[in-house]
Image (cartoon, rainbow, N blue to C red; front, side, top):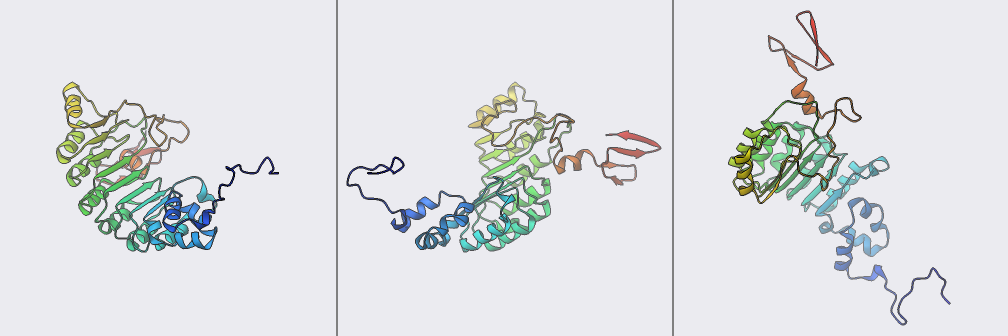
Length: 308
């Protein structure tokens, strides 16, 4: 008699041995796992699964999302291993919270077929991304979320990746930051003429920057402008947007389906440290001779101290 914990099955039904499935079926199942689960668990189950996990086609899509595993694993080393496994066939890679310029250089030096690149909360510099952009001629989708990259880098990416169709450039909105900046918008408009999908969450662009994007990106079909609070969408302008864009999200639209924390940060609140480009643009001060002072809470100028 079977114990209460024994699995129930119809009388006479065969017991399925998952390790004896056809390799193509096994590959289809294992491909749903993330890279860490494959490397740490799946490939160790049996020889058949190990063989399947070594197939370069299993590594066309590599996903390293942030789930605190970077605290117990060397994700940089694991990512290099996954890239090597792809044997140059890597098409899509998601790097969350651990990528560096060195790792990005290794990835792009090993893979010439990348079509989708996602960088989230990564320590990637403007110089680092600019340096590898020429190795991404097939890139179609790019996400840069909560990374500090200059508008010059966007120009380099746009010029190097003519097939780019989707761009996500996401940040956080700070209630105490009132500056307006169209540099990123103009870089997009000037170089990314084939964009169909654009998300620029919490960007500092104004109406002028948005008009430049609309003029410079004729195929644009979807546009996410949530928390772009420098925009002043008067009736005629909003009407133009609604008529032109099939899927439109406006600054005050709900953020319930947004992947990241969309809380507007108040001055003095926890975790209210702006991203690097915010400090670069708002708190670097020029004196009369053009000298630049780094921000340290106040600036000395002609015997006075001005708190910023």
